[in-house]
Length: 124
Image (cartoon, rainbow, N blue to C red; front, side, top):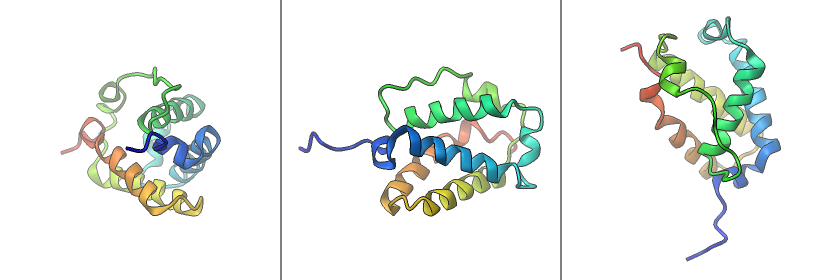
């Protein structure tokens, strides 16, 4: 058993890289006609801050605790569709590819994100 197994957060390059990923991601999202109106009323600096913490924790960073609102509470009134969730993942994937994240790590990240679909998509 390899005790040196790095978590996804470390594989991505830690805080700085995850921050970069999320910043680039929201830059893309806010130019995306399918997604941007979900964020019209949002405080984007707060959204990015909470998303960075959420991603860090989801990716296995033991030093980060997501303290934002419950995901269902955040998303239940936004009427997000599966198509929008898929587009969200596509942006994430493309940015990670641009950042030259290895494919295996990228796949692992997308699988982690996918696990949250049911608490984000409420438009059936």
